[in-house]
Image (cartoon, rainbow, N blue to C red; front, side, top):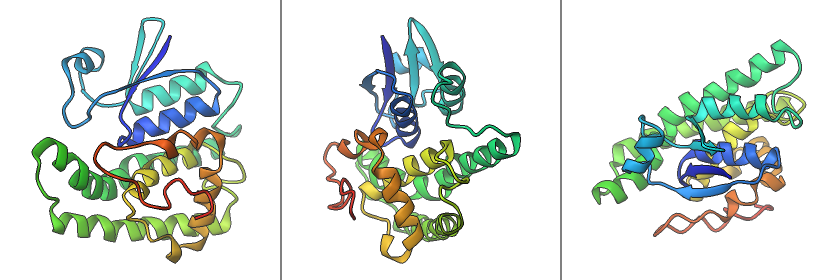
Length: 221
């Protein structure tokens, strides 16, 4: 059995789910709360972070390790390009979204709106939300710039860079915080990603107690 320990609000869990779907791997989901890791999760991954990939009794923990493992173990559907230079560009953008976007946008919006609600039953810090939304504008401008010049974010072909970006954006979009109308090229690019079969289950996600934005699952938004 292939098991993915995840949570719908975790962008890295979403990233791995999309990769698995692109590679047409069957898997079972088990949900864990990222803001309050259980003993069972800590036994699988002492860092307490999501996602965790379990297959045939083996455990691969963490966003980077799972991504690289799946790319090596399932080469029939490659998500990295052939040349070293093109792979470097994909990895650069993956790092941009996994690290920079996550710390500048996700933590200031999602952690404030969702983590605080379930972990501490507190209202979000309005100053941090404002910082997150301001940072979001910067990142959307960059995505818009890339999408205007390229077919996909890293070049001509769909890649891990698109998955990393869409996984982060989809959580923010669930909350309705992305002003798509101001970023035409980014919106066209995201519409292409949303339309992929691998994204279908992401659009069905439901975060307990929080309804998705009206356009969240709409492919023609």
